[in-house]
Image (cartoon, rainbow, N blue to C red; front, side, top):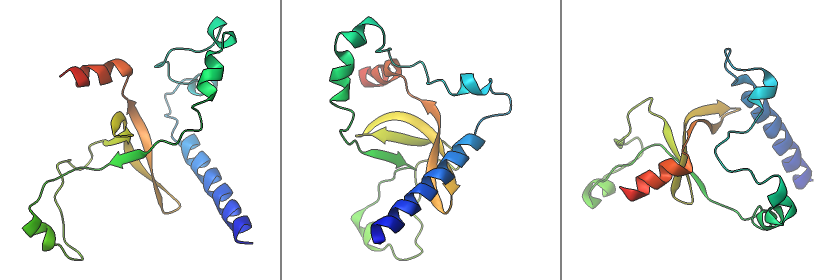
Length: 141
């Protein structure tokens, strides 16, 4: 019975998130068909390469879990100040209010976004995706 309730709750939640995603299309956006196209950031695996087995190789890694982290900000404090924290304490972060939040996959920055709330759950709407060339430039610094 509990599994059925959890499945129903997940379906409702997925529907709510889908509705929130549909609302995010800007007024001046291109037609719906163009808006549904994926970003042209990564190389295409279609065509002759797919017939050669690249898609089979890609299929092997599609179910590998990765850790996604959304980072609001960071700070460094002394152990003395850490031990003084109590319920209601405020810790100042290095990020300014209104700044985009970093989205990390396995510790690597891949995007930035803004917080959204749907049915009392937090999510993040991606506003900027870091291209592979931008990631390489940051590594080389």
